[in-house]
Length: 291
Image (cartoon, rainbow, N blue to C red; front, side):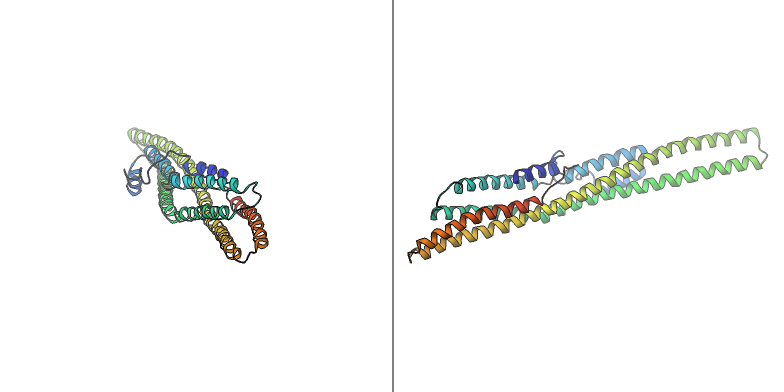
């Protein structure tokens, strides 16, 4: 079960090239990029914001804590496998085995708790990166608005030229100059219409990215919740097994061997119950592939 979770997490969070946190932002702040984009022609601004969006997405997929989390999960998987081997097929669980299993489960519980506590830092960095991506969308909106405003101005200019030519007696040179102006307006309108179409496509893609990253953030939240719940489940199991060991010591002085054997059987059955609980927690975790 955890193997599947780790694989899905790796796909969702590490699918893009690994970048150090803030590696691309170190070159230029998002505010500077937006300011620069606002002064560039539409094609150059589109290229700049497209590259920035790509780098921002990569940053969301390469949080520096994720490799440590994955390593810890792999270690817990291996530790769980070893514990299963210790108890599987055993006729009677010895006092030493109970103590060893309790110790190992306690270690796993602490590991789950430690990596679950990384969640606030992960989300703090993630939301900062998502804020940058949202800022790119705002700049795209401004560029679309500017292009549409310019289109409206050019079309109004053409209407005024047409009206002026019809209502006034003009010389040949004046008519020729107006004709050339109108042709230039038409050429710019054609270019701006293409720019608006391109910006519109970019905006749709940006909105899709924001939705998918938002869904991914929800999955991350579930993932860290699962880690926290697993820490609680394993911690409770360790406590129960430690109690069994303590109870054995207490009962041994009274010669209550029969009761102890019964308790040991319950411990073996409770191990199966523990695994079912863990599986139920893990069943709720299904991270979708990343960007």
